[in-house]
Image (tube, one colour):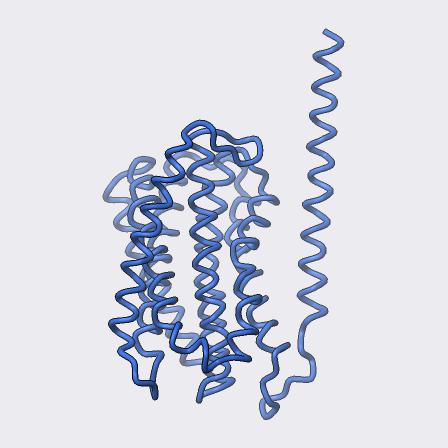
Length: 302
């Protein structure tokens, strides 16, 4: 009995220590967000690498906002989990469409076919995610994600892997847009659009994490982690814009394909299972329309 009590005590101490680490990381994110802010950037100033990095950083941090709803709802009913999945799926489909559109129109002035390159990237993104899912399944119950094992760990790993991988392409998009002909205006539009896009991506990460007993704080931090490639890739893409520009249509198409797969074959089926097909269709369509409207509002405001 004493051994059991001692083991339980050690377990709770370990969890408390992990909470300290999580809170420390959250504080670090907030401090960096304030510290990196380019206070000297005026409407007529030249774009520099630090400006590009900050916009990429904001898009990454915004992903954590997807976990905010779970701060107010500790254990939502199953039907609301389904609706949340449908909303995340609808918004991600809108984001996928926007990425594909940007990719198909991103090579102005170059002797390239952006539509074909974007379509090729989309197909590669779909095939890559399908292949990755099969590889993860090969390991079966041996797959572990922290304290989570088996099928739950496989799904968490797939979602986080997809989100992190497609962030590379989005980071290139941010850097290239700041270095293009339209410069600052286009860069701000792309960055703010991606920041909005990242919220449902964070929601998807938080959904799959919190339902697998990951803490809300940790779910939010994992969501931000999946978007860290954005500021890291934005700077080299900005500095070497001529090198990265030919890659942009394929990269954005790849991101669009990967996100479309997650929405159509992961989020929507689970939403229909937890709620109903009709509820999923209504919530997904409404979320898609809201996301498209928000993007147009951002575009009009810049």
